Image (cartoon, rainbow, N blue to C red; front, side, top):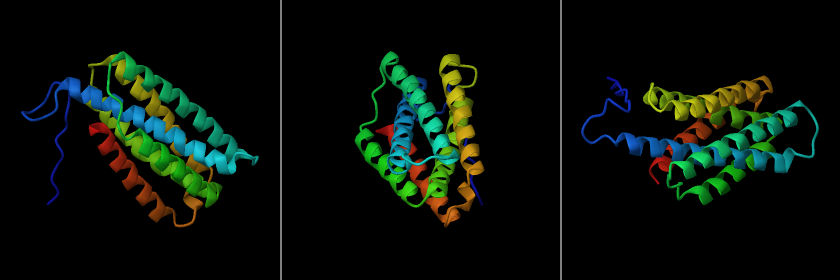
Amino acid sequence: MKTQKRKMSLRDRLPGDPSAELTIQRMIRVNQAGEYGASCIYAGQLAVLGSRKGANIDAIREMASQEERHLKMFNRLIVERRVRPTVLSPLWQVAGHMLGVVSALAGEKSAMACTAAVEEVIDQHYAQQASILGQEEDDLRAVIEEARADEAAHRDKAIEHGAYEAPAYDKVSQGIKKGARLAIWLSERW
């Protein structure tokens, strides 16, 4: 029998749950780390594919630009809210860049498959955060929803540009999704 996960909100917490303040700090920390990692993925992809021309490369450049904008938003929140960034940033820099390079070396469609997998996880992650915030923290929820809309559009664009046609899409996608979920869990806490 599958256990149901309890829906968490800032107001509805049980003893032992993180405080509302800690929950918000974790959100900002993990989102800043995630946007940093995504920027590194796109940088790795562009390091391999950047000299090429075509719709896929233009799409990667556009998505990279949006990730940089998201990163600036969460960098600002890290400072404004006095949130400690994750200590894992150096790891995410290397891992993100390597994932971008490897996916691009496998071809443009593999780079798109990487994007589709990561953005699917991030879309779900941001939706959960927005739900937890509910009507509280309107400004933070608005930033998260704005980033979420872009991430969902990135996923859709990657699919349009052949993500599902990448070699071994299902296996590669599942591996990337597991890695993204692990990175989320670690960055929230460390």
